[in-house]
Image (cartoon, rainbow, N blue to C red; front, side, top):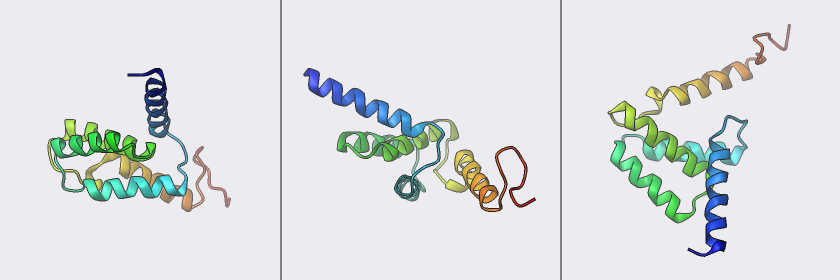
Length: 113
């Protein structure tokens, strides 16, 4: 492996790690994660593992690789097919979005009071 490809690989790994950290996602990132979740629905662990490797090899955007990685890890412990309805991370995001839309702040207070 050349120094240039090692640098590119390291940068890709850093980008995926950054995408996996908690943050307020950009609209394109949210859409990418939603597409991955839709594609992953019904997959078992080995299928998600294959999809993760394919995304890495294809140089998919960091949010896509990070979401496949998260789903693959979830299914390693879950044992059944993937379903967003049974994914605690997704359910936590939906709850947070709902609270945010209702005017709740992170500190438990409402913005409209």
